[in-house]
Image (cartoon, rainbow, N blue to C red; front, side):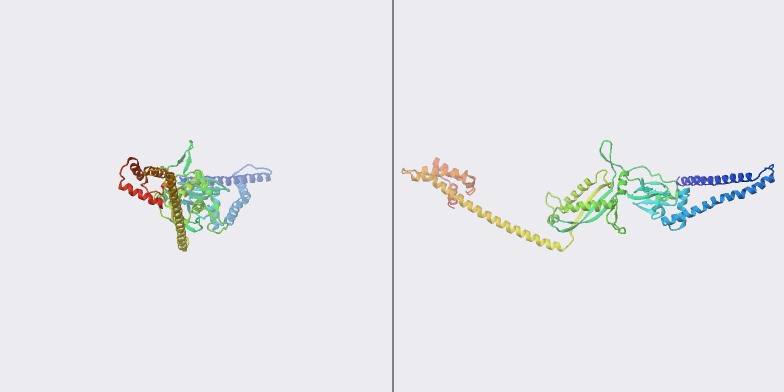
Length: 479
């Protein structure tokens, strides 16, 4: 079918050119015939001899009239071919003449043939068809898509598999790889405490295949199961089958167009290999590098290299989750680069300068030694405060007991030991209810007080535990 289209186009164009030549010949012949009749005053009777004589007179004049047209038909293509060779720097005059012929009369064969596969032009790259444009044959494999340009304007998005033709002066402006892209890029960053570190970012992404349906929901295009119709040209079909044309990969034309036009001029040096950064570099070097640097700058080095703790992720996993979340927020449906993030992973976080390990360990030891000394000083200060509080509480306890018994001792009446014991027990009970004083009493103070109540109020014999507890209570009070 492709060759038949070429033959039809070429046949009709050449037929049109032949019709123009015949029209010129007819016009020239008619003009010469009128000239001959105008110069002959009397027209004799037409005889075969006369017709032959006039024909011999008519033919040279007709050819002479057509001579400028024939010269122009020969000179104009020759001049145009030299101009094309000079303008587009072709390798020879034949290539320039073939380019002119294809654009005037159409292609008579599948040459030039441009093949796009794996996100790049693998055939006819750098040729006149690539630099200037068609006419030319174009084959795009299923793993690629192209954006074409004609007359200084982007005109078409062609996704593979595609078998067709480039129009006159239509050229492939940019090629986009539709396969998932996996970039492992080393990002250099600074920690919160100013130490340079390096981390490998493993990012997998592809051309966006998401779209928003009529209900406003985000959908993902499913891979096509349709069989690929190969061209009827036997040689081309066999070549495509051997290389594996494959089924179409899901994508959206808007995403392909955004990725193709998302060029980034990074360095203002025309000869620098990284002067123009394409859509893949913008994702990794532009956004991933900047986001990861900002995340790492929020953490100290000791936190980044510490081991995992129960119930908590590794620092690398936490940073990876933050990076994935921020990248997904940066590339929603319809983002300016036309990208969808598939997976995010991080490698080990290393120090750029190995000498920093030793310096960091020394600083870490000094920091922990300082914290240890501060902790010991705070502990000693707290112990001194507790001892002072204990002394104060014990003094208040003694004063309380003395103040409770003093009225009984100061009276002139005889006071029975029973009354003194009752007052002593009651005073101990109220002291036991005071949290500040109770903290410095023995733990079993309440049980001892209950034993004393049974002895005093009921006249029972005290148990050995009660006597021992009462002794400890007196000892603690005296302290």
